[in-house]
Image (cartoon, rainbow, N blue to C red; front, side):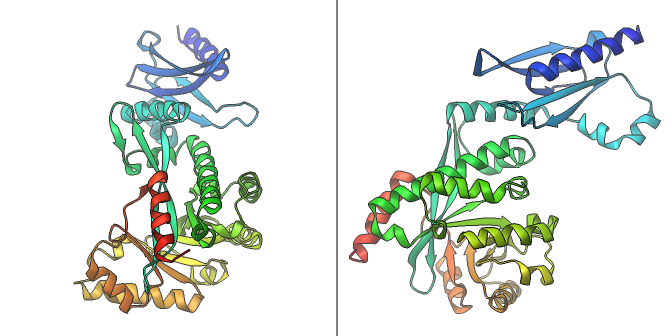
Length: 364
């Protein structure tokens, strides 16, 4: 019987490798497999299979990104029971078997959202704090679920960033933001001097073709490189600091603006901070929550601002919500800011109206 199980495991492995587009463990003996039929690549068909009859104790899910296929493949490996010593010798495999059923469902819904074009971008204005004039905006992804309505990025982006979906979504976000920005520049003179900021995931930043990919999108959309700012977290930069320096220098030579995102929440080497060819340093909102009443927080922000000045960087404070926070940041000479005090993230159509209003105020 054990020999038969092994033969079935090998057969199942080959079959799933050939046809599965996604596979998730729902419990100790149930598996959901999403199939993408060759005749209909846009159709996601969930298939629930009962595996208890073959006596498997766990399923190890291994994520593979196959570049030689038009869509990603998820490989499912079935394994018989192991004793305690085996589990201790393979902690990664044991951890991989602990798949959250909620994540399985969310992953399937995200795949459908991509196919159905349920994602959209909103744009939050960024202003020069000294005058509160508009200088640009940040592109932020939004998802309107057909059943559950609006879903916050906090609810789905952590999963996206650990799967193969991040490449697809990152590519769409960057191209859509550049396309929309180019359209605004063609219709609103004020937009020609503005910059759109786009967040790059850690996965996407580390891709060897990053620079070529960014250039191809700029060429395709016609957006000038100087009108695009890419935001990368300090945690991502420090994963391979030397590689980060090389990639950032190439992007800088193209004319793309660069920003360290969520500064202060990760670990940075000062020696590398001096080598990164960045334009701005973005102060994480967690440092601003009580800046209007907390003296220690004020001194912490002051220290970050002094570091930025010494590095020759402009600074952006995100999450500004009250006039007191704004007043404190102005007194500390922070360069730029964004937050609900100025504007919530706006749909593209609403941003068009916002640009028209700013244009009229500046008599352009």
